[in-house]
Image (tube, rainbow, N blue to C red):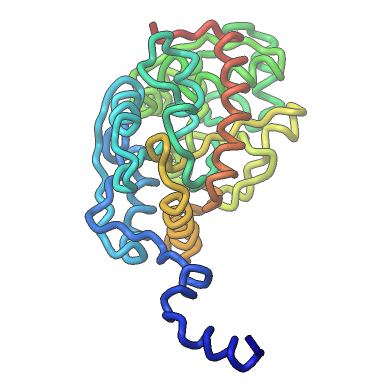
Length: 325
């Protein structure tokens, strides 16, 4: 067969036979509303972050993203619900370092594994805490706090949101690094601890900035230092604790996880939508105002940070002897 005959024969082939080599699958989009499950009550930092992201991505996905609060078990009830959900792209958990790093070591009979039973989708933001003290405490800096604590071992009462919480571990790491000892008073949540600090019944608290910013601004508590290694845009006059206590850093995060075996095309679509949502000026500015560092990182960034923090939290659980059982 000569060249002209070959070309005629190729032209006679059905066009459809050439399409698979060039066609690309359409990006995944949900065909029903998407659920973001939050394992804590409405109004907390995890809930607030989840709602910011949910509102930001609803338009991109073409479906509403509904936040559902399933409260209890330090977030474990909501996490278990998502771990047992179908990997169809319609159900996610708004996770934190507490729910998806710490709890694995606090609860010996956890009915799921925080890494094996979930698919990382996006690292939404990184957050920090701030040391706040009652105004009557005679210290105005981290250095003065350390000096006072060393003069009176166990004489300063520190409140936390509970044994095994991020506030507890932030404080325990500070004690270890600074060589001081506080008297730990655990509460059922950060809000009652903050109220007792304002009332003068506590000396200090390591509080998430989102939960204490208004009290700092009103002068009801005094901020001494932040747990990140650099200053926060929302508190430019408050130094990093690491400036006084070398090597100290304690960050939390919020991320989005789906059930295990979530298809890659769904992960790609969701992480892309979240990254775009976090970059919008209104969401970005709101997160910064709350003391967060907006990230919008993809699945790999979330998985890497989870692995590192699981190792960190395992060591802090051993250090403090904390247990939820």
